[in-house]
Each structure stands twice: as C-alpha cells, then as structure tokens.
Image (cartoon, rainbow, N blue to C red; front, side):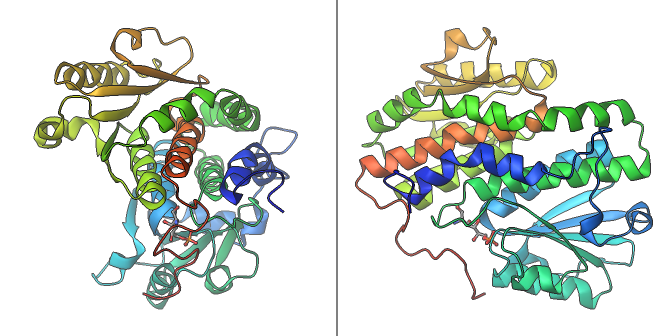
Length: 368
Ligand code: M6R
C-alpha cells in the first residue's frame, strides 16, 4: 500500500508530479484557455467580486498566502489571507461582492468550517478548495474546486499542498481571464507554463539525493531557520512547519526583509539557515536576498541556498546549494517546496521518528 516506500509521506512526495497533472487535467483547454465551470460560480459572479478573503489552517494557510500574490497580480483583486481560527473572532467586513476562499485538504477542519459558516451567514460567496470529495466544507460552500491529489495518508501535507497551489493559480488566472485584466498575454503564457509543471516537479525529485545527505548531517541540530521573500516567504514558513511537526525541532520561517528588525540576532556560528532565492528575472527581489545571504554568512550561519538552475551569483555564499528548475517567480513555490519536504522527512527519519504519525497530531483536526 505504500508502493514500495517506507512511509506514506515518501510515497506522497513521489506522487506529486502526477497529483499536479491530475489537478490540471480537463481544466486547460486546447485553445489555451481555462474552463472551471465545475466551480458552480458563474462568470458574472466572478466579475462582480470586489474583495477576496482566504481562510485556512496550517499548510493550507501557506497555500493561501501564496494565492494572495497570484490573485492580486493576475486578477487585480484585493486579497487578504487569514488563519481560519482567527477569522471568526473579529468582525470581518463581508458583503455580497466578497468572495471567501476556504482551503482545506480534508474538508473537515473545524476551524475552517466555522469560518465558512461565519462568512455565509454574512452573505459572502464562499468557494472551497478541497481534496476530499463530498466532505463537509465543500458541501457547505457555494462553489468548489477540487484538488486531485488522491488520498493523503501521512499527517504532514505534501502532495495536497502542491495541488492547492495549482488550484489557486487556476483560480487567479481564471479570474483574470473572465475579467480581462491587463495581463492577458502573460495569463495566456502562464496557463501554458502551468501545464509543464508536472515535469518540473519530477525534475526536482530526481535531484534530491544531496538534500537527503544534508538532512542526515543536520540530525543533531537544535534549530533551523528559513528565509524567503515574496512567495518565497510562505515557502519558508512551510519548510519550518514541516520540520517542527516531523522532526520536533525548533524551526522558524522569516521574511528575509525582517531579518534586520530582530531575527538576525539569532544568527550564531554554524546555525543552519535555509534561504529560498527568487528567480533572477526579478532582480529587485533576487539581489536583496543575495545580500541577506551575505549578511547571515558573515555572522557565521551555515547557508543552505535554494536557487534556480544557472544562477551563479549565489555560488560564493552557499555552503550547500540546492538547484530547482527556472520558472517564473509566482510559480516557484511548486518547485522550491519539494526539497524542503524531503529535507524534513529525512531529518525526522534520521532522528528516529515515524514521519507518518508525528506525536500529538491528527490528520484532520475536527475540534476548534
Ligand atoms: O485538512 P486541512 O487542509 O484543512 O488541514 C489543515 C492543517 O491542519 C494541515 O495542513 C496541517 O497543518 C498539516 N499537518 C501540515 O503538514
């Protein structure tokens, strides 16, 4: 049942190219346009949206943080992201033109379900992104876009996360398509590129052996930090969450720009710091993070750098360099997250933990 793997998590990591492909299947037309009719929200409803609020927990929340960048860029709709457990305890301003998007692998997370109910009571339209057919959240939403990751058994979310990313890219691009935003050509190009992502994820999986070795060499560490900018920031948060839940290690993700506002004080000799470097196509982001790497290295950090193929600028500052395929910035989380999953899984295994059943955690959290 584990398909020859020692753990479900390893099987699910390996299934990601297929999961991404299945989530795209039937949604990208031969004419290069998207069809998401199954969502049950009409194009007119989508044209009327004035604000989007995304609610989710844990890893699904990280997918939501990445969605914000995609939605605000391509669809040009203001977008907020909130932890579902916080959302209903304030007084969010919701109207009929607010679209709330609830992201949940299981479709049973109580905090997210309560946020959905809270939003619907206030007459907002609610769209679910879920992996489990017929689960509670999609039944209670106005519309639903299913991810097709297949059953995810391991407690730590891997393939569900990648398919949630695909789903939010599809929604952002579809909103742009029906609303005719100024990014028409880019949207068309992105849709084509999305179709190539399964092979890019496959390519990453083919190069993760050094990540495993690195993870084993760090099994005795007490703390690992993760830094990113733009969509690399939620990727950093996701890398840290995986390490906490599987390896029971102190791990934190920071926005690289925040370093000098406090966290840089944590840097000490040999502290492992993972840095996600944006593509060179965005020099403003890229060059800033290269300076951040220099700053932390000068203070003794052991730098583990995730950068696109061909980026030579980072070579002098990387104690370990992990390559990912070159893709546009907004899509980079699809490839940059995979080495972090492998890293956490291997490090936890080296520490003797069962990665499928981490202590104190349940696969779906059905209490608030
Ligand atoms: O089923 P959901 O997507 O609603 O679950 C949300 C979180 O509980 C979940 O992502 C959790 O953070 C994972 N264990 C992370 O790997």
